[in-house]
Length: 379
Image (cartoon, rainbow, N blue to C red; front, side, top):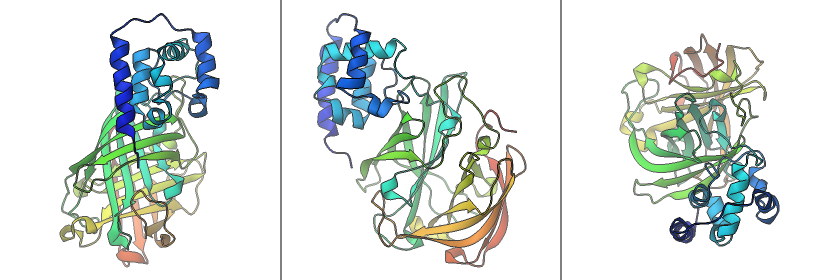
């Protein structure tokens, strides 16, 4: 949980008002380099990019980043944020082009599987629908987690979050949604209901954070540091961004007839694996409310770059707690097998056969279509 943020933001906001009311000489980029690397050790987090700093080539932009990003506001609210000369010099260093390049949030390379190691067994699947030509894309986040009370599969919870990503901006503002009232691989179609808000940002291609605030009456709020589960494939500070035909299959897939449930898949040849998360419901979940939600993960029994028909093992994970370090009773159990088969960049099938767990005895084939535009490089 994030404490003390309001007071830090108040200090920074006060400084912004003071700064904007007066003039200041141009910063010293050479001194700013020393401040960035030695005095404030900004490169401890930004040695591979300036994602969370965003438009920090001006004092106003840097001050805004100090306010927006909790890790920065906590660390620098009473130091860098309050020193006009240092702010000007650091901003000048960033603007000079000598600082590490900024991380562009508007790129498909940030798509993939993300988690916090301390709470392993829950996490996020993120897809960025990049649109570099317009400068504005969108992010879709699938969050698989648990209730605040530990238990069996009926305590699994999942959410989605959506919002714009804009080239040059430090973070993306998202709305958190929840879907309930569905049945496993069957009607009815479910509709999402807004239950909160979030801010998503990335420091590098392999690290970021999600700040969340639920408005569903639970009072849940906090900050989750994010680490990439698999190796980075195409995320880059270079432009144009690289592509990979296998990784370009990564993203959101669903069956139109059962909209409101689906799969998020990452195909990662560099790590030699596929990681899929399946967001669905129990067979009779329509009348169960949130207790009817179910999610599964799937990983390949074998995978090699270029494969388009991938056999997987399906896992059910229970015993976890929402945004809480992994409890000793949490466990993942193999409950079936399946095959993820890509017929094209926009069409796929998923066959499944459950041999254990809450869906024991169920089998079938789901025809899937891609959500959103096809990423560059997909073949």
